[in-house]
Image (tube, rainbow, N blue to C red; front, side):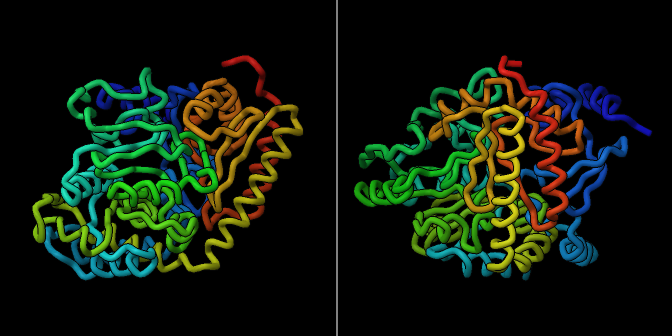
Amino acid sequence: MVTNSELFERGQKVMPGGVNSPVRAFRSVGGIPNHIARGRGSRVWDVEGNEFIDYVQSYGASILGHAEPVIIEAVRDAAVDGTTFGAPTEREVLLAETMVERVPGLEMLRLVSSGTEAAMSAVRLARGATGRSKILKFAGNYHGHTDALLVAGGSSVAEQATSDSAGVTAGAVADTVVAPYNVVPELDDSIAVVCVEPVAANMGLVAPEPGFLQGLREACDKVGALLLFDEVITGFRLDRGGATSFFDVQPDVWCFGKVIGGGLPVGAYGSSAEVMQNIAPLGPVYQAGTLSGNPLATAAGLAAMSQLDASAYEILIERATYLASGLTEAITGAGVDVLVPQVGPLLGLFFGTEAPTNFEEAKALAENGRYKQFFRGMVERGIAMAPGPYEALFVSLAHTRDDLDQTIEAAAGAAAGVGDATA
C-alpha cells in the first residue's frame, strides 16, 4: 500500500510543492497532505484507508456530496457518447437555459472551464462594454489567479509571503483599484466594473454588512460602471437564484463555477443580452475555449442542478445552522473563544471574540495560530477541513445528523488542544 508520505515525497519531485494548488501542501497547518483515494457522500478515504467526514467538498463544488449516483450516471452516459468535440452540444444549451431561468436578470452566458477563466473574461467584457479601463476589487476577495485581479486576494494567496504574486507586472495591475470590503467606495467615470464576492468566502467567511451590496449597486448606477458578482462560491449554493435572489440585489455581470459543474471543471460568466452582444462572434470582445461546454461537465452540472429545488436549500441551511450552533457550544465549552459566522448554508470559523468585517480583521484572526492547532486535532479525529484558515466550511446534502453530531463531538476534543500562543 502506498502511503501519504511516499506520494508527497514523489509529488515534490515532479510538481511544485508536491501539489497542483498551493493550499493543498498543508504549509499553513503543517504535516503531510492526505492523498484522497475515493469519496462517497459526506466522507472521503485517503490512500492509507483513513476515513474522514469531509467539509472541504471540493471547496463547495460537491453540494450533493461525493460520488452522488445521479451525477455518476449522467457522466457515464455522456462519456459513452464522447468526451469532447469542440462543437456545440445539446447539454450546454440546456445548462445555460437552466441557469438563466433561475437567476433574475441573467439573460445570456458563456461557459468556460474554470472560475478564474470566468472572472478574467467577465472583466474583459466589462471593459469592452463600457470603453473604460479601471476595475475595482475588494481586499480579501479572491477572483482567481488572473493577473489584474491577483491583488490583495484571499484564499491561499493570502497565505503566501505577500498577498500579491511574483510575475505580475506593475502594468498588469495599474488599472486595478483595491478597496476595503464592506465599505461602499467613491467611484468616478474611469471605473469599468466593480468586482465583489457577495459573501466574502475566501477570507474565512465575512458577510456583507446591511446595505453594502445595495450601496454598490447605487454607486455603480451613479457613474455608469458595471457591478460584477463573483458567484463561483455563492452561485446556486446560497439559493436557487444564487446571491442575487438571496440578497435581492441584481448585478450587471455574474461569474459562476463549482456547483454548475457537479464536481467537474467548469465556469461561466453572463450578463444581459445587451451586454453579452459584445462577446465574439457577435461583438469585438474575444474569448474562446476548446473545452468550453465540455460534454462531461455539462452533464454533471445538469444532474446537480436537477436536485437543487427550494427544499434542498432549506435542508442545507438547517444543517448548517445545527452545525454552527454545535461547534460554537463545543469549542467555547472547552474554554476557547470562537466565532462561527453563517450566511445561509455557508459557514466560517474564526478563533477570537470580534467578528471580522474586512480583510485586515479576518487576517488578524486567521494568523493567530489557533486554526492550525484546531485543524490538527480535527484531522486526528476523522474530520476533514480546508488546510488553511481563509476557507469556508461546506455542508452538503449528503451530511447526516449523525455526521454533524460526530463533528461537534470531535470539535470539543480538538478545542481542548488549542492554546493561546501563536503556533
